[in-house]
Image 1 (cartoon, rainbow, N blue to C red):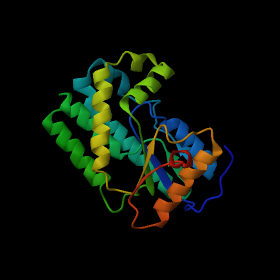
Image 2 (cartoon, helix red, strand yellow):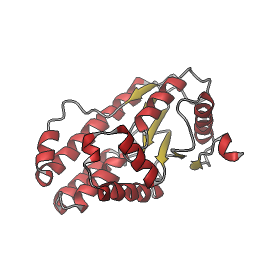
Image 3 (cartoon, rainbow, N blue to C red):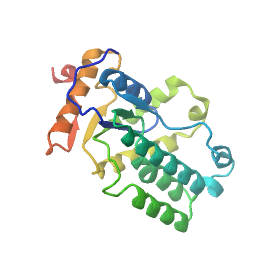
Length: 229
């Protein structure tokens, strides 16, 4: 993807959010190239709890979530300190609003542990000193379309996961984004854009510019030129 001339601040943080299979990683790389920003991805290597977690959810869920929270907090702080632009493939806000809450609701975290985790999250993240994203891009689509994408990429662990889990996660995301107020939201439907089409990517960039420059604009539902015809 060739670079697109844009008016976004040079140190902008554009964060992506959305359930598994919506294409966050692909769009992260595409937008980073188009904007001339760096891409930032979730750290998966070297996680000291991941193997234990999959062998015993109830015992290790709290530890895993604390680890993810610490790593993502450090990542966000490093990005802010560099003074350059980033596109980030998952938001720190999903940690408590989606994944920790899911573990708690499924009985894998006690009341005490979840309350401790939530309190720590609020102290670290829900603070005026914490660098918030300039725009959060929420990628969405119908559940059948998302399930088609999960099947198409053919990851065995995802293929073996019950449909009920994906359905639960899908509706958790819908509920979470409806209450999200930390920064402006650009809402993309997975069928409304094409990462391989420069004009489609340019339209997304123009939408990001609108959200960053208009202080009264808190939410924008993206529609491509094709959809408007």
